[in-house]
Image 1 (spheres, one colour):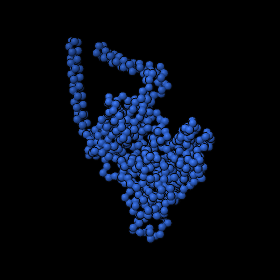
Image 2 (cartoon, one colour):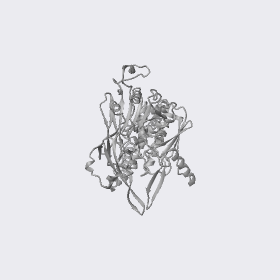
Image 3 (tube, one colour):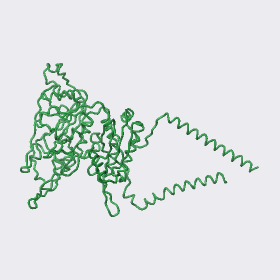
Image 4 (cartoon, helix red, strand yellow):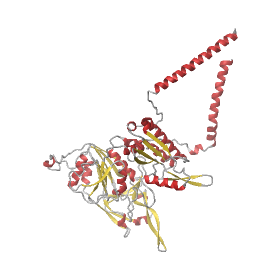
Length: 567
């Protein structure tokens, strides 16, 4: 009797289990069928690491052709670069969710070929595209090896190709932090590159000429960098009311002579009609060539006749020079061996190196930016104008009011740090809003009412950037005519962030989609405490705890089944 009842119970249990399994299987099939018609992705990371912006989704959904991406991060990579490689792959996979078959990619190891000549040929091609190599040293057992890594990608769309530098180098920063910062900017970098190669209408930007500005050779790299996304030109106003008519932005880079009132009026009305201006101004007349004779010169104020105009817009570039203890290096002759001069590098306090500490998208995660003979910039009262300090000196700086005696002889002695007591003095300012005309209530009524002039005393919303160094976007041109990249320091071989600052600034001034806000993404680094993780008990806990937990679950399951079926 007991055995027959047990048999029926077992049959019922088996039948119920089969029915539950069948119901679960049917439920799973139904869920998959329903899910195929629905689209849902949940990002559980605290910083929304895998959440794409609406602008990114729109761009990917609207692709009309295939974007092919070659990523040169493959092979035997150091751990930090391998994490960057995985982050790029995850981002591209996320892009494919929206772009579908219109996005294809492959990862390539540029060092895979056994043929050295073929490898070098590929290296040269990548360098020609603008993908800068990184030399990585790895310490092994008793030896140190070097690897050449090209952390970049090439995007191809409808026959147009564009290079993308994936690793954003930053001076005096650990590889872990650089990779994390580069990962933060991946969405923006890819979308910005896609914007550049997938646009039918290119906005026009003009470099102003006519007041002794930087010449076309000195601006070559700045103009070439802009030409990936914009149509770049030069313009001379010379009193022509329609000189700026077809341009969206104007770059004024280191003029050395006073502006005429008529030209100022034309620039003013350009701004009132929504035009953007990137001001790069030297208020003090001094350069390194003037020190070559006897190592000393006096920097004097330059009258550009722009003070009143900038003041009305909300900024003032002061007549002073900044000295900063955090400075670029220059070579100084320290002695002679025979007739051969011996040179050493010394920090030149008039060449501040600025490490951006703002989270604004223009400067977020940028490399140090090199200034030359910079002045301070003040913000002044201007109704309706939002002012943002973009770049400042370090905590150990000082200003010297005009006239300033500039001498290389100061490098012969250790500086008095007590004199460097000025902190974070502004060097670059962003102004946004509806600017008031500098010529309001200053011109005759007949001119103000002229249909040809179409004078506006209050502008439509616009933006401008004011930088107190006209040389910031200058490329060094050698005596033989060789043009060096913007931001490259020929004395140290380092490349500073000047080009990226300039490009980001122009992109922000002309950005109407909000794409630049993607640069403010932040991913927190969650690293182990190296000191604590090196302790023996931590290692044993990490080794034994997972085994113990799994064993505990297994034993608990065994005891529950034994009690249920055999008691």
